[in-house]
Each structure stands twice: as structure tokens, then as C-alpha cells.
Amino acid sequence: MPDPITMIDLFAGCGGMTQGFANAKGYRPVMSVEWEFNAASTYAANFGEAHTRWGDIAAVPDGDIPAADLIIGGPPCQGFSNLGSRDVNDPRNKLWKEYIRFVRHARPKVFVIENVDRFRSSSEFQLLLAEAAPGGLLEEYELTHELLLAADYGVPQRRTRAIVIGSRIGKISMPQPTHARGDILDGLGLKPWATVRDAIQGLPAMPATTELPVSRTAFFGKEVAGVFKGLDLHIGRNPTDRSLARYDHIPPGGGRFNLPDELLSDCWRKKKTGTTDVMGRMRWDAPSLTIRTEFYKPEKGQYLHPHWLGLKHADNVNRPITQLEAAKLQSFPDEFLWCGSKIEIAKQIGNAVPPRLAEAVARHLKPYLQGKAVPQQPINSQSDRVPKARRAGQPRSAAPR
Image (cartoon, rainbow, N blue to C red):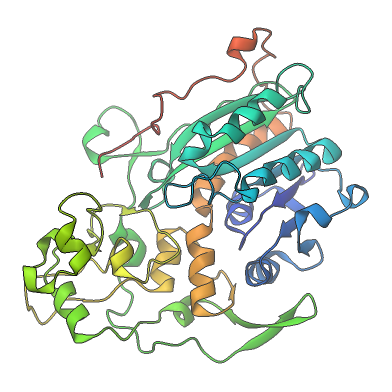
């Protein structure tokens, strides 16, 4: 057996990206760094506390950075996100420079950066590209970047992410899709997109509780709620009668525009266009839309359970998805362990890299890192160093929402 590929995970969150690389097998994490305590505890519960650093990445001394074959990670994306402030001076946008510091000291063969789609149109991204030019801090690395759609890689979710692969062993392309939308499958030899049904069918229609079990453990010398797994996370809410009446009017694929006037909030009544997925209901036989951190609030997106048989039907499931259902839509395995309150766990789920998307990247990179595949030769032309995506501003299989 070849030696394991050593790996550092920066801004590791709960470990969605590491989970994907673990799924691909042959990788061994030697360090992870995460600022948020509950997320770091979740990571440690799944992958080990010994190599996990909880705290500010800027506080990790250069001398503590180990050599590694690979660095992965996603610097905080709030400043780039459509849902964020889009403030070019947001200090979280600067954390990619810490990522570069780790690359300079660990000297991996390859690094992978994951971020929201807007990252590729940000000023920070342009600075990153400049560092890969001759004379830059990353001048020995060839960069490839593209928007990838998680559904194209087996995730039951239409989540678009920016992926950057940097390689000093020759240019490495992006992984090819393994799945596609049903109407374009013919002749492609791909599997159909995974669906909400594939992910959550068979779970109890109505959760038995609204609270996590009482459980405490300790990581990094500090107590935390957990660990939890599986049906522990299948927890409901206590909606008001007005909320239940709203939910009952929403068919699969519908949203706030299906509500009668008397159930509209003032802001919805005044806003006649846009935010079409607000108060939305999922479809059983399609991927979900993006799972964000407040998926337990239907007013934040298309997060209502997909089972609906008609207005006032007794068998309608009128509730938002649970933490367990969200984790499964993100492609986390049932045995994954979680730490924190139910709100903190929801944040970890929504912020995570879908493991199956990370697994596709991991499987694609493995033969290059093991010397079994030969990357493209280094490119001399500066104009060719960073190719544009297959479709400018679009993932490989962009589909209308």
C-alpha cells in the first residue's frame, strides 16, 4: 500500500472537507485549524483531537506548521457571499493570506481552496491570482479555478462553489462530473442527480422531540454539548398556528407567492418580485436548493419538508427540515458526530463543504499526489496560467432555480 497522503485542513469547520477526503481513502490529516469552538470540537470528535488546533490561525507559529503533501480549506466566505456585506474591507476576506502562509511553510504538492461562487469575482481573488504570477508568493504553483455544482458530484443539493486547485507538480484540471440533470443524461454516461428523496425518505415524518439529548463531553480542556449522531439530530420546532397555516398552502416547488393575502407579512405584501424561494417547499424528486445556516427557518429559503398532498390534507408534513435531514442533504454520513447546541450544529451544517463534493476532488487528486498520473506540463504563457471556467460565471451544469 502506498504511504498515506498527508494533509492540512485550514478553516476546517466541522470537517466536511476532511470527511470527503476520508471517504476517498489514502489521506491522513496531520493538522487542522478552526476558530469556532463547537465546530473544532465536532472536527476533533470525528478525526481526532491530537492534530486539531482550536483558535486563531494567525496565532499558529510558523515553526508549528508541519510539512504536508496537501493543504485544503475554505477561508471564511461571508464577505464574498451574496448574503453577506460584500465589504471589500471585511477582515475575514484577508484570511486567505494566512492560507498562503501555511502553503509557504508546509510546501504541499497541491492545495485546494473552496469558497462561495462570488469569490472568483472578488478583489481578494485577483490578489490571489497575482501571487501565482512570476515573483509572487505562490509563483511555483499552477492554478486552476472553476465553479462546481455539488449536484454534479452526487450531492442531493444545487450548491455552487468556487474551487481553486494550486499545483507545483504540473497543472491539474478539475474533476469531471459524475452526475447530471435528468434531461441531459442521454449519451453522457453519467448518473442522474441525487434527490431529496434519496437523502431523507424513510425518516420519521414528525420528530419526537424539539431538543437534543442531554449529553456533555470535553475537547481542548473545555466542556461542550454532545456528542450527537443520527436520530439525535432529528429535532423539530414549535411553530405557531399562523405558521402552520402558511406551511399548509405551499406545494412542492412553491413559496410565498402561494400564500393568500391574509397570511402574507407586510414585507412580503409590499415586495412583489424576488426572493422566490422564501417560505418554499422542497421537491421529493429534485436536489434541494442550497442548505444555509438557518435552514430551520422556512422564511429564509426553500426549507419545508417535501411531503404535501394538497391544502388541508391530513398527511401533509408541515414543518421545516431537521438538522439530521439538512446533514443528509449535505451528504454527511449518519455516523458523523456533532457537538454544540442545535443552533450551533445548524451553523456547522450550513457552512460545511458537502463531503461528496470534497470526495470527488480527493479522488481526482489522489493519482497525481501518488505519482501515478502525470499533470499537464507547466505553462509559460502568463495569459494561460489561470483558465476561465467552462462557462463564464456558471458551474458545469448550471440549471435554472
